[in-house]
Image (tube, rainbow, N blue to C red; front, side, top):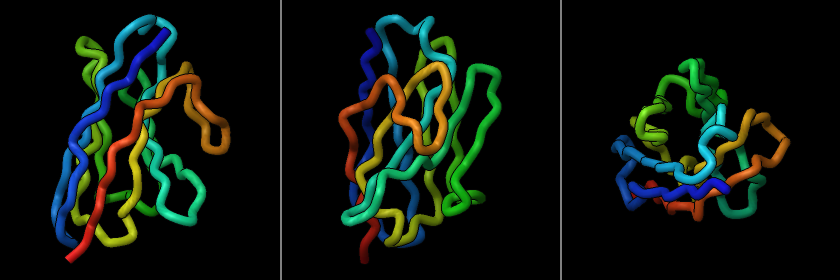
Length: 120
């Protein structure tokens, strides 16, 4: 009932910045939380950042101070501004949506994923 379309991934050098976007459509009433997961090769999928309709946010310790999640409720779009990128940030980043997003509990809806590669 909800479709998520991601954009903004790419190749960037260490210390650089990228902005990811995720637009939701469909039965938007079912969504309270939107956020971003990432999965690096050989690692488990990690919940990176989450934002709810009120604007409250939460971040993984690994990205605090470097990444900022924001949400435009009118446009049903969530953004992830990534700065100070490190090679260890290299991963496929997935947009996700549900009534709530909880680490360790798969969300109801996923985007297709967008590759972020941080390399010299």
